[in-house]
Image (cartoon, rainbow, N blue to C red):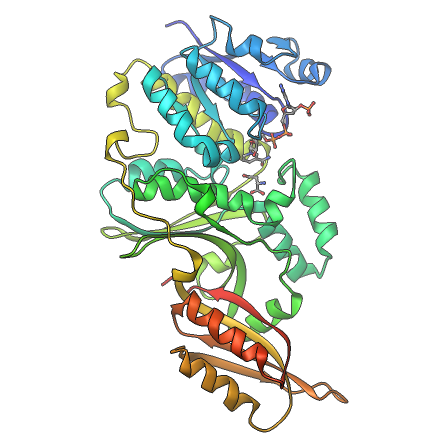
Amino acid sequence: MKPIKVGLLGIGTVGSGTFNVLKRNQEEITRRAGRSIQITMVADLNTERAKELTNGECEVVNDANLVVNHPDIDIVIELIGGYGIARDLVMKAIANGKHVVTANKALLATHGTEIFRAAQEKGVMVAFEAAVAGGIPIIKALREGLTANRIQWLAGIINGTTNFILSEMRDKGLDFDIVLKEAQRLGYAEADPTFDIEGVDAAHKATIMSAIAFGIPVQFDKAHVEGITKLQATDIRYAEQLGYRIKLLGIAKRTPKGIELRVHPTLIPAKRLIANVEGAMNAVLVHGDAVGATLYYGKGAGSEPTASAVIADLVDITRLATADPEHRVPHLAFQPDSMNDTPILPMSEVTTSYYLRMQVDDQTGVLADITRILADSTISIDAMLQKEPEEGDTRADIIILTHQTQEKNVEAAIAKIEALSTVVGQVTKIRLEQLS
Ligand code: NDP
Ligand code: HSE
């Protein structure tokens, strides 16, 4: 059979990994795919570097349009990133009848509906395993491996950069900025690293997973997004003393009223496997009604781990390209006419547990005032820690862990607690999930 011809857009961190792994494992990959897969064209702004990387083995061009419009190209791999030029190129490739592989979660979380519709109409595939959790085959697991299940919830450490930052800060006591620079050097961080540290990248990935898990459209604009920039070392320490670790989690949960879709720092019991996922590693915990909890773990970022997922998509497409478009695995797992409109809940309606830290004047009755406010708001206390004031200080830290309650109850209680004259400054609130 003649080789399948691939055009690669962007030969940066993931693009170069894809080129190298495909070349290194060409023989085995061909045996698996049933056809040889060859990158015959590469487009990159830096053509000199691209020529060096590809060693004269394929045509290198500066204008990516030449690739998406080339009649010989069967599959386009988009590894440029962002939602500007990348979106135009993906839409053009689809319009030209080419299958697309992309690692671009930002693009799919924001324009996925339009892209998948266009692909469906044109009868081509858009594959995106690398867009969520790097090398972990979580898309395939959700879309195919768990297809018998009604997914109840999923929770994941799905941003390598922030997990790397949290681990290095905790274990080595390094500063945030230094660790972020190292994550950039290692190729984990996004072109704009605020996407990582402000939780946006994790929310892109959680949005994509929520669509596949629940059969809803991708709705990044409805996700609650909070990053790690406001997290304080004090809270990481107190959480440890209470038997918890703080991780940036992406959570999608089915509830009777709708879907919770949120990314925020979260306390997790230290004994859970997922609490011990360190560095740039990712892990996703998925709970299905039949299978129970399943955990997927591996490298969530980096050149070759991500290339592993990109190439798995290339092989899938090569195997399925000849299948009738109506009978391929649907992009978002559910048949396009069977998507539902279960709403994504506002954060005020979310139910979870909470870690609350407040600084108080060390006076009689302060604790009673605080616990009364919590009780009046129907918030039940699970655990409490009071730190004695440092010598010469008159203020003490109180840390309270609550049982599950609605976010709006906690917000109301916090407002009342902050209004107490004995409470200094603001209450720190971090959500807590037992993940049991
Ligand atoms: P890089 O910035 O390393 O690579 C992007 C490449 O695209 C660069 O070589 C860049 O060239 C090139 N490029 C930019 N604009 C154009 C254009 N108009 N035409 C052709 N080439 C262009 O990014 P990554 O490889 O890290 O990421 C690529 C995608 O993969 C992103 O969507 C990212 O979110 C995703 N991803 C990344 C992971 C990672 O670990 N890095 C993991 C999972 C997904 P130049 O450098 O000259 O600007
Ligand atoms: N910036 C992303 C991360 C890359 O740190 O996880 C992988 O998607």
